Length: 144
Ligand code: RB5
Image (cartoon, rainbow, N blue to C red):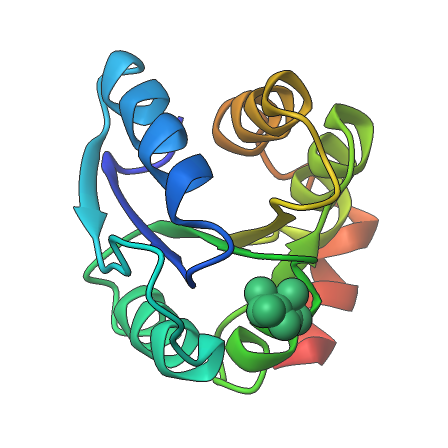
């Protein structure tokens, strides 16, 4: 399990899924930093992605979850901030491998592309799976 503070952010396409995943994280005993957005009013995902990426890169949160319609815009946005390794995942296996092989510290999800149970599955794997280290550690180091 990571340090208990997890940041979460979404745009207007992802705010409903964000609320569900926030509850899920709290049920896992995590302390959640919810960085918005909180309603259907149209916003720009880079604004929320940047806020979340800086929160994770600064260490104020150990990991983050970002959600937009496809997850693509958010993953592009957060990966621009040094120190962030975001993985766009569509199933539990990709989320587990993102932790085991890539030490991903941000999970990106597409609210318009995946169902709620699959999103929860991704979240559980992302939170519960440790980094494998070993041969993967030198590769992750090269990303820095
Ligand atoms: C918003 O309509 C949509 O473009 C956004 O949520 C996201 O999917 C971008 O990548």
